Image (cartoon, rainbow, N blue to C red):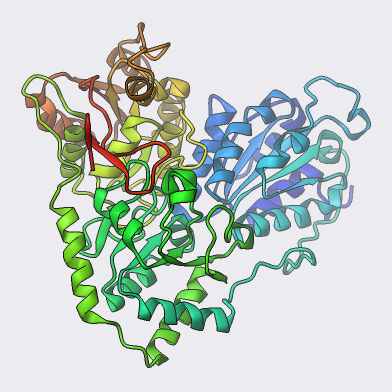
Length: 574
């Protein structure tokens, strides 16, 4: 064998190193054992052995969300690959950069229903940004380079690379050919907004009397939080975030009017409904924001900025579309605003702020305290205090997710890690593990519920193996809380299959894996026991908080209504 040539499996490893990969999240199996053998003596790449491939995708996802880097997953063919599908879909819905390397049966057996054969490219086609069937070992480095480029550029997303076992064969050797740069004729994301559209947008913004800046996950993904804050301050405009956009502007900033949408703040939803101009930045007007699209902000001129042209006017017609990368468009907008002769109507702006502050005074996030039962909102507020608002918060999906979004003000982007688009239960814990690997010196907290945590609870074993001292805060209400809330509100309290009639002792379960478990049953214990939990800096602590099972998440949009038609509490409408 030519000493300058290496096997296909070694080409994979060498290419990943060239692409500056630090962690691979995966689980071995027959079709990818040659890659695992190539990793055996490798010191520059760390492989994290999960206990289920879905957890590998969520760990890679959490790592990517926290860092902005591409998360990498390695899975075997067949069930290993299909176990990744939920995580791929989660990343796709939230535009998270991820590359999933999937093994496949040898090329000559593809289509024969061979052992552990599944067409993962076909299975995942609707939920990936792109996919590759790599059939030539020498093309492995180029294919991986293209996969990483596609995953991270434009609107980010997951890319699947299928690698048949025969092209990885250690008995065959090939030249390592990595391209210096990547260009794809059919793919050229637009970065710069059209000058005429920028000018129109600036004119609309400056002429507005009731402007609202509506920022989404695109601000976080493009690392333009500082530019957003600068624009908000220069215009003295109210700014609202989507669930995915939280942290795009500090949750304590005076111009931040809270999250909008289904469980958003009254003042944010009211401001949107009464705005005359809405500047949408990296936000896609999903149904959890708009409610009834026919009633959505009918009197507003909508300026929509997005790097993905297919997101423009997809659900809500926008009057001034701007296609481009936010990092570039922010600079263009600021320049156009600075050069314009149009002056902001400050008197109208003062009236607008006066109205918004009147809505704020209704304190829509207030809640009744109880001397006997822990309110979930109180648990989140106590978590914020004990972590000084500086923790990375990964959440699962349900009431606990909304309580965390409402009551933990995020000071910076990438601090809030949650499955917004797909709403994946089981996401939070492995995502928090990925965050902890990225930032070992920071507190990484999974806010979860008794339903969600059980979907990937086996990863307690992975945490022990790799020494990942995440903190798990479970708001335990003995039920599928959000399902039960909908059943209360829409199905006349018929709680069909929403109560967890058999739950483990989570404290003992955590201890059985070698971790620490703490149970909190009474409001008087909350602060001290949380402090105790976070005093264990090098230990995973499972904090099982017994919360009021009858508590609902409010505010809540009224189904089929306008964006500002809301329940403020049980039986009380806005």
